[in-house]
Every structure is written in C-alpha cells, then in structure tokens.
Length: 357
Image 1 (cartoon, helix red, strand yellow):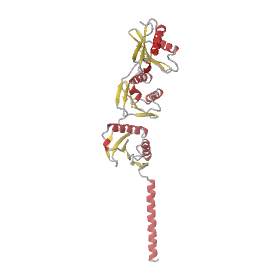
Image 2 (cartoon, rainbow, N blue to C red):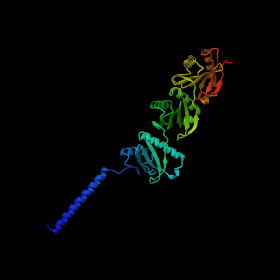
Image 3 (cartoon, rainbow, N blue to C red):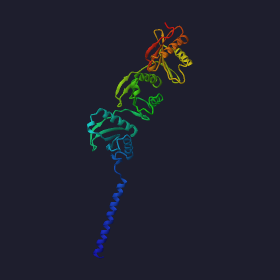
C-alpha cells in the first residue's frame, strides 16, 4: 500500500472517531437539559436538589402573579436543603428595610408553601441582579390555606380542617366572601378564644358589623366560645381589635335572628318570635335582627333599623304601635320599650310604646 493511501485511510479513521465523539457528546446533552426554565424574558434556575416538575410548578406560579415573564420581571433560583426550599428573588436593594415589602415576602412564602410545595417550608432570600443574596426573610407560619375565588383563609394548627371549612362556608353564605372581594384572612385559637384576622373593609367601615359577626360566629360556628375580631391591613397587622361580643341565645326564622338574654326564658323568647312572625315583622323575605332582654323589670325589645330611618317619623310611629301590641299580647301588664338599634343591636334611640307610663 502506498504512503498516500495510508495517510488517506488514517485521516478517514480520525474523522470517523471525531464524529462519533461529537455525536456522543451532543446526545448526552440532549438527555440532560439545563437546570433552568425560561418564562418570557426571564429565567428560573434550579439546582440538582429540585426535581424539574417542582421547579416548573413554582415557575408557573411566579409567572401567574407577574414576578416572572415580563420585561420588568427578574430571574429567580430555587434550591432545596433537606426538607426546606430556598428561593432567591431579585428585589431592589433599597427595599431591604421596607417593612411592608418584608411582610409581603413573608406572606408570599406562605402562599407558595401551601399552593405549590404541599406545605413544605420555604425560605425566601432577597438577592441582587446576579441573584447574590443580601437578606434572608424568615416567614411567619400562617398555617394551612383555603381559597375561594380571590379570598384566602390561613388557619393555624390550633384549628381543625373541619372547623376551617365550616367557617369558610359561613363567610360565603353570609356575603363576607364574594366573587367581588379579595380578603386575606387568618383564623387562630388561643386558650379558649378564637381570633379572626381580616382586612375586610365591611368591618373597618362599621365596627358594629364586626360585633354582630362575632356574636353570630360564636353561636353558630364555635359552640359559644369567644370570637375576637382583629381588623388588619393587607399584611395582617392589626389596626382595630373588636373584643368578643355576646348577645345571648339565638332563635332564627328564615333569615331573621332574635337573640335573648339569660334572664329571658325560652318560652318568653319563643312567644315573641311567634308574634313577630304572625304580624309579618319577621317574614320569609325579611332579614331582620332583634334582641329581647329585661332591665329593671322592664322588657326591652331592640330591633335593627337602617341608619337612614332612625329619625323617620313614620318608622318611629310604627315601632311605637309594635311596642304597644307586644305589651298587650305577649307580655301583658308589663312595661315594654322598643329600642332602635344599630347592626350590633346597640341602642341608638328609645321608642316609648303608646299608652306606656
């Protein structure tokens, strides 16, 4: 064989070996994708400690809430150490000492834990543009999470799953949670007292609504235990604390509610309820609230009246007639006064029944 043929054969063998090596390398790369997932113009990096499907679930959530994907977004990195996940988020350094931002990050950590990571602990580390850490945020443990539309209820380990679901059903059935609301709530229990934390504006606007809610929740949901309501800001910091509010035993007819104090017998309370139903004060269409009590040998019937009708002459005359009829037909030979009340059944003004001394 000539020298030229030997050289050509050697070159061919070299080329074949080189091609085989390159093919093997490329094949290996295609079987081992990079530990990163792109979302628009941003990227979620993750370490070998995190399965790709978990990283994808987290990335999808961050994309959903707007952290990943847009031109104004930033990259993120997810790691796992034993049972704890660690998430680096790019946050401007000047926000490091902003309390609102730190609390928001803590709440975000709880949301991701419950919605994405099946309750596992998540530690979020604030980082610069290169994902170099500068502050670790230790999140508060808000508990498990129940959602409905845009409403969220976290509940602590002192609350059972059954209690929390019953409470959420009550919030929805009473219009506290609707498709139009976006409440961030928490239910907790300390010793013998339930604590309901909420940023619901209906309670902040009128604390009498919070008092009535406390009384009803105690009676209907929590077996008579005290229910304190903490009206909070959007980071669950308390603004107003409404102590537990008790109105007594509760009787109901459709959407109407009649409380009665302990010095009123069940027979007396039911007699008044029957009379109110018979005279259509309480009807299948109405949603009224009342309280029957005795003070200094005088029966007092408080009835919730819309604020814009408190000084209405016709309303007051109607209530005066009602008081007189209650006196004659339910509590004969007794003093009876009707009180106009706010939504917490607190007296706004007194209506003296016709013929009363």
